Length: 111
Length: 207
Image 1: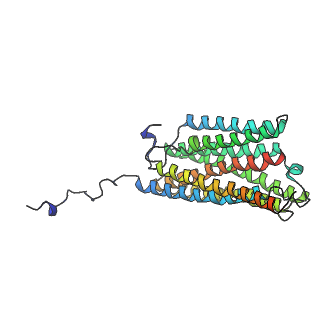
Image 2 (image 1 turned 30 degrees about the vertical axis):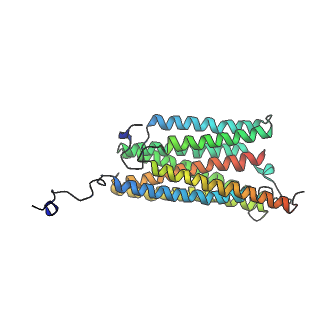
Image 3 (image 1 turned 90 degrees about the horizontal axis):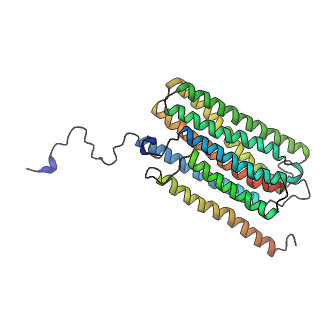
């Protein structure tokens, strides 16, 4: 994507090709976990890994192809704030699960 | 001769480095992006609550009893295609093509509406089957998380209506283009949240 694709600082524009590639990748990354879970036959551990990997990959596909996120100087603050939020979200979600699991363990719940 | 009191050239503002035609729109978009990031934290707390309460069925119905993955796949398809059609609408705005913009925006609105109708039907169906928001901790967390996403979609659709009124009144002006770009970010963001919802809630729920 060249500089002429950006007329507003901080907001990049896409092209038809970019949106179509993003759509196709999203469909594939949605179909894989749905097919695996609906057909069964794969061990639950592997299914879990597949679901998580496809979800993370699709989030990146949408950020890059639909939200046009990149590391150009116009976009750097959007990207920086997003990276910071990923850290906060990880602390909130993983931290909560971790703490509550230990709490359940110490309170002998579900044992 | 004192150079400091020299009369500046006409048009000189003293802010040469900041002089950029589209700066104002860029600030609005970055500001809206920061709002979206704060919305991420809202959803993070709801996802954390859901994860923590994911086994709290209180002896009642579990997601395995109720979730229908084919139904969820259709919901997902509607939202994914609406994200794509909004992209097409943005390209219409970029080329100042009002017909293309309104056409793709209407398709996006219809797909979003279809998604919301399906979600309302699902909530109604689950409640009738005996899994309402007050049934157990799990179902409270479920309705809280999925319902908040649904409310965001509804807000996006209302925004679309308001924006179309503005577009019909003023055309594709600089201001309207900025508004459209903000709504576009919001709509794609809702799709990103839905990816997390169908992966964490529906797919992991029936595993």
